[in-house]
Amino acid sequence: MDTRKAVSTRIQQLCAEHGYNINSLARWAGIPPTTVKSILYGSSRNPGVVTVKLLCDGLGISLYDFFNSPLFQSAEPEDGK
Image (tube, rainbow, N blue to C red):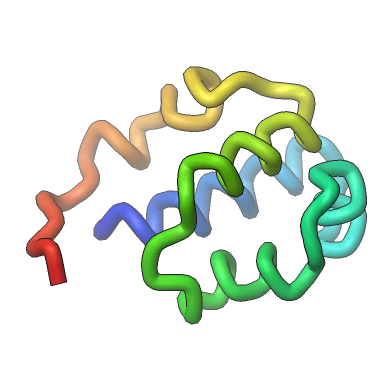
């Protein structure tokens, strides 16, 4: 699994755990729902760490908690393209 897919999958997992949908997560994170959708549906090729941090803040977790998942331990190396 590539990193973009791992980030998307992790957001979906955390939303399910916290009972959030895209709009409620966006509201709690203080970002537009379109930003969340672009990450989840793959149109955002490189979601920034600040955006991920805002999502974490909205979920009430740390960046460590976000990335501390088997999804990232098995992520494929990036090709830089």
